[in-house]
Length: 371
Ligand code: OSB
Ligand code: MG
Image (cartoon, rainbow, N blue to C red; front, side, top):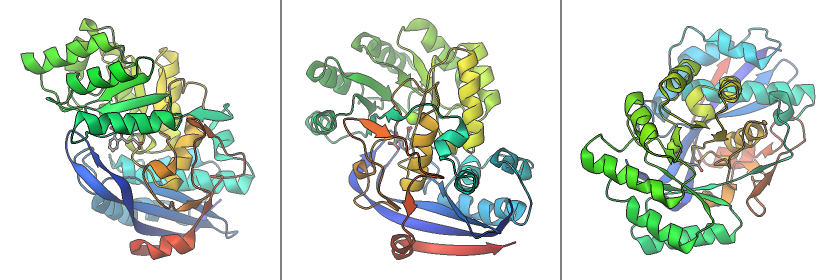
């Protein structure tokens, strides 16, 4: 297989509901779609799901654009490869820039599985016909607003809710949601907002009594020692997200006892190949995993669904339906969840048609790279 043509498309979609985390709020997202064509004319799509600002990861949509255009696509264009796992090797000399790499990697997997006549899930080693979805709920103006959001999604059938927390917005919202929904699978995600002051650590420790499935990324990404210390003190599993960019990070965190659950994000790990490898490594250490999201448009969302069909994904993933975030998605049909369950497509490739006409109408910028 040989990529003969590639293009990048910066696409803007409005969010149906404002999303606030410990660091910032957003009303629309700009993601970069990657389109690869091979010598037969087959097309594979990927998604660079980087935020526009460097608050979750050091990458931004602009850095991804630069790195994909100047380094990643030229490394791939015109080179013969037989397996998408080889594609990451073509840019092995590029350090970091995981989100940019992930978008090109997804496109290579989509192209390869489509051409081979197998679903992306099967190509990755997936075994489940359906995957269980959870919703990620942002910080709301009031507890009443948060309860309304949880209620809406529980009524739609989602069996798990994750609440964004930050110092000052933690014990109270958790207590209120737990009181209203005693049996809901519930967890919290701090996106690294906590420091190691006595007050902040006390707040985290007091979350231990609310039957949470996990506490996700309480401390800063590189502070594995603080996560290990908290995990020694509480019985709720600590989950790592931002701390784990590579398999080496995961090996180190396991040795330190810094996690009992892993959030696997295709974007953060640099693609589907590394995401599968992280799944395999976690399984060797009996660490349950789930698939995290970056508010993906339909292309990245379909990749997340395919990945979540692997056997180690035993916890609900952030693969909610497209309509949680977008009125109209870039794929047809959009990703849907019935009773909180997403059916894994069996058609070759991504299993969704990419709506090029709609994409053209919401594209902010595009660029072409020929082999
Ligand atoms: O930490 O999981 C996170 C969105 C943007 C940045 C970081 C995170 C998130 C989410 C969204 O929680 C989950 C989703 O895509 O549904
Ligand atoms: Mg997270």
